[in-house]
Image 1 (cartoon, rainbow, N blue to C red):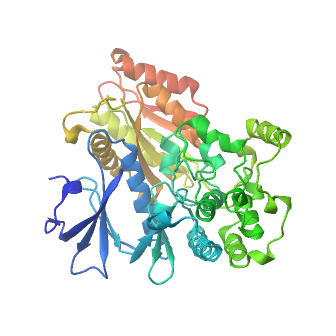
Image 2: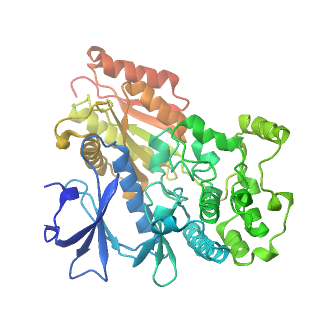
Length: 465
């Protein structure tokens, strides 16, 4: 039986399933119990069936890392986690309360409620930031209003940590976030600016105060990019009685340029608790969008918007990477052992580097497969476990190792894309004495060696050794 189809009364690793709480597109949530748990708990099981993407596994890895790093507080406490080689799951604290999305049928909210809830959510975002984490997927369904008056943030599968490897940024080249709330810089792939969460909070506050989304719910990249040049209808255009200070707060959060937003969530929370003290500008009273000329100027700015030119908040950080290419086509154990030994020597010589062990596989079939055991996420998970086993035999500390399964029809191109998108300073790859007869291997090794914008070391084993 798949873990996502567990019935009440069944068990998984000693956890007794009490009931299914939620079945989402990425995971299934159960209420569970076990004698050694410190309190009420839920189990989150990722969906690994056909039709799902390998990104499900990466997102699961990210959430596991973030919950462990946060240690509770503004997010649920992590109690246990499943073995990736058997059945992945996360067991975490159950927060008593309701998600913010459960109250979205009551929009628009009163001014007092918008400010009260907005402030406690901003408090939670700030507390997460103080743990060096940016959520990057703030939206009503990812916020629980607890019975004790807190806001608790859930679903950290897209989050970024200042001092942990950003697996999503390293492996994917597309916008990651929820379309109605994603910040402009996230659309360009910037994931290390805490002010991205301020933008999402502004979009959510706009929705609570007006009953509308500021940019709708676009489903294409061009639709997402409209927020660079199209100003939303001022909140007072929907709700004429809205406090001018609250409109000023919301529109400041929704600035395209992160430098013009609130610097952090603590400032936003303070403004929401005292909107009468917010300095007002002309836009505080507007009920219509800017004039055609002003929109044209905004369009010009949007066309030239370059998030790389905007200094990110000081949460960003990344160690240099040594990429170790572990190739599926090579079965020579002597060659594999030589690659492991060279990786260990390189790591000892460069103590500030991180070792990224990478394997490249062909993309999963578009139409999926008949057997869930061969689905894209199951295949990704299986290869990830094998890669971790391979890397475990490299004699360096575990904290300096990450493992990446990347899809790509062309191995050389996939590796070069990874190198160009990440701070890779050295590539280690193996080439055996009979590589001349392995066309795919030869082409990949040659292409990486010739085109990589970094040092490339080719590990070989002499014939007859």
